[in-house]
Image (cartoon, rainbow, N blue to C red; front, side, top):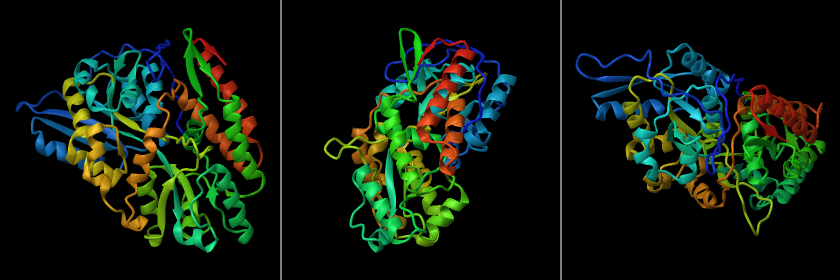
Length: 439
């Protein structure tokens, strides 16, 4: 998703084990516009976010925690202004206590000093989460929130139309995917196996799968490798399909995409676990005709999968009740009733280890023909590289890449060139923010 640029106000590079390196911030302030406890002793916490299902989890918490009441304010998604709204509020001193922030954007929030260090309140919960997700919310040794989910990727596809076009099984490898794309398009030039959209984070999942990192650190410097040989391999593959006109090029999550899917013009989507309910709600008339398979891999003998997303409930700068905010953040990600709700409505794959045994993960999904779709993502999870690092300029990097994906889809640029352009812009942005960088 595209994010608008965030200007950093406090900058330094620090290495966090298997996690993100970001600007450090003096986020321990407690001056907040949050309402103080009422005369009856109730603590009220504002919470900004946009994911479906969050309201229900908040209601469950409020019912069981009369002394802490959370008020959920549904904002535009981060890519459509939600992050800008949070940052503006944090800088003005009137941010909510809690915010929904993707792992990829947390380094930028940390660099901007927009989050509060709540390590002392969250440290006891560390053992309840997958280690790599805890690293995503811990930057420079400070923990800013509780992980909610991970986002393994799969292939969502039309079973009936695969059969119609002679595809007996979903492609296991990217070579098979390319062959199937050619087969479908040859049979009917108006039909495409998949779509090449403009979502930078979906593309990041493809790079993640291919062991093609974008950021790293060494010797106190940021390293940027968007145009590395491994990344050029990924770009070259997709450019090859574009050159042969084998992919539809509807913008990601656009109404035109779902119109084409509903009409049987696009037969599959390589996307994250959280896209399963989005697709189901977007093409309701095709219910029962879809299925989920693992995303294609580069090497069938050594399968490696990608991750596209994952978010946290973070405590924002100035929260007057950080202890209670941390309590809610932990509860939302670990309480069985909340996790069950988030699995069913939001489509999360839980970051909390206890959530992996939640019965909701074993429920058949009518839209996907009664398939237990989470079984696919469960099998993939051990084969996802958890050392991926997000950089502190992802808001700008994702915007630049999203623009490049769009122009490549239109045929006015080529993906290998896009990566070089984004590489150069990212390095320049890091330097502009006063960070030491190589790449």
